[in-house]
Image 1: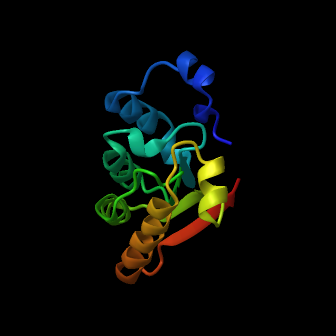
Image 2: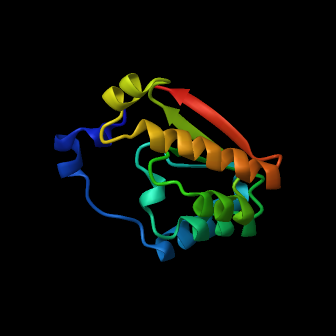
Image 3: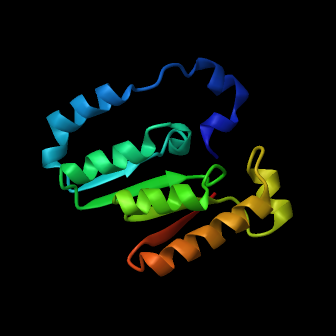
Length: 138
């Protein structure tokens, strides 16, 4: 599971990139990139400038942008804004397909919220049919 679910691990995690730092990284590296994976190791939807990062990536003409998330903080507006900014896919951690399994494996997760997130993605896909949903079973 996500190591941020471990209370002891979270105590040792410090710091956050400022958007200006990300802009410097983009300037140095993004012209060479084909795909950008946002997430995997931390929850990217906690970052207040997530949409700005996606838009920045498109400025550098990165052809494919993917976001990996547990989906707990996704709203229809966030999914729509991210897709409009250039997000190509969301990889959603699927901790279980029943309420009991999901909530047992997903620290502080709510199965009804997970199902609502899937509905939001379905609705956004009607506007952006090329937008993809992938699933990681944990």
